[in-house]
Length: 68
Image (cartoon, rainbow, N blue to C red; front, side, top):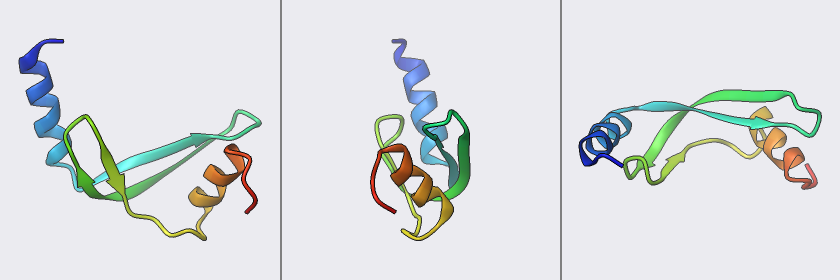
């Protein structure tokens, strides 16, 4: 990959205060939510804040076959 593009993408991600987290459920329906970025390492990793009792957390648990 072009080093210049990676640097620009890293700078863009690191400057964001929020992002979108999405999951596709077992029936093929998307669940998307805006979340605050807790920590980002450019395009390599990004951590978001959320609670465990919200709709997004439940959608992720169901998509992974976990008990809600």
